[in-house]
Length: 211
Image 1 (tube, one colour):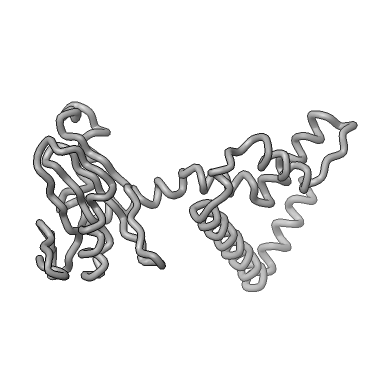
Image 2 (cartoon, helix red, strand yellow; image 1 turned 180 degrees about the horizontal axis):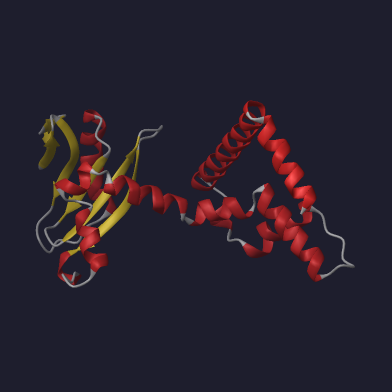
């Protein structure tokens, strides 16, 4: 594939859709982040979400982010010389790059799981209102005579518990926005269900009072 007077080494297409582009380096050559930039440019031109960088033995899968600027996130690394056919975890890694895996969006699910468990997401969760409220409640149980408020809990978490790179920067801000959106969706869903089925809510409240 040609783009801007240069060439992409390989492109994998299934059902007339480019799934990922592959940048191939000489076997044994050390792979570097800078080497994926050319393939990312190709992918952006084609609207492709994934790029693979490989030297034959090591394969790296990058997810393209179509923001400003366009970004690439390393999601998966496979070193074939270190794999074992007897380990299910190793077989699952390779499955992400197979035709069957792509048909079932396996690598997209893997990427979503990585994002959910990233230090940025977990850091933003720890600082979210529901979690801070729980921590405050437990602190009061631990030390009934000590008075602490939410602001003090959050400040202590930011200054003394969490690393700065977890709560600052673009990735941390993006994680905080995602958590806020998820919380808002949950609130809207709860409110909608309360409006649509008020009798169930009343029944639940009555049941709780009787307990």
